[in-house]
Structures are given as structure tokens and as C-alpha cells.
Image (tube, rainbow, N blue to C red; front, side):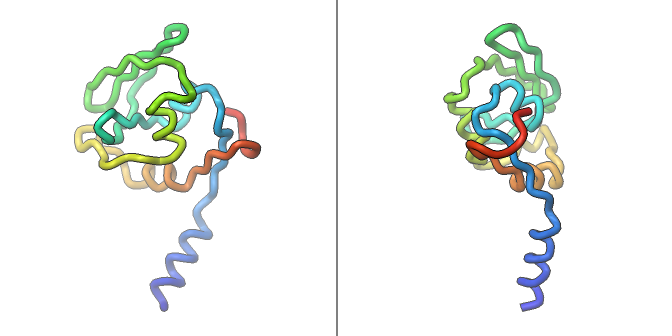
Length: 114
């Protein structure tokens, strides 16, 4: 019982963040700074260089991805729905960042537009 009360108190203390669901994909990446790779590994983003409709993403483990600006892409859907299978050990994403990411809600009609 005491453990359940502690988890309820911690959940109530967490600040809920709301963002619009259909914002520009590159703005969402710049805000969240996380990238789900194709095999389901979550990487931390070191830098994003936007070149028109494409962007070059460099992760903390020195992986480079060239991505297109698409709201319906696999990565955009995985970020919105918080789907990932593991965290990259090379990127060393801190636990607080994962907790903040899990406490973020992406809704259709509510939240900041970034």
C-alpha cells in the first residue's frame, strides 16, 4: 500500500507536457532531441542541420542520419506514440530525459505549437 501511494505522489508531481500532434517534424526533433532508429533503438541527438526538406541528424554515438520532413514517417509515428525497444548505450541518455519524454503528451487539439 505504501509503495502505491508513493508512486501516485510521484506521478502527480510530474509535470505533464502537451504538444500538438501535427507540428513540423523538424521542430519536434529539435525540441525532444531523441531519434528512434529503424531497429527500435532510441538515440540522443547531438545536432540537427536542416537543408530545405531534409535534415542531417548527428547522434551522441556519432551516427549520422539523413531524414526527410514528413509527419507520417516511421520515425514521426514512433516519436508521437513513444515506441522504442531499447536505449543506445553509446548515447548515454540520462534517466531524467526518458522520464520527461514518457510524461509528454502529443494531442490533436491541445498544447503548444512549438
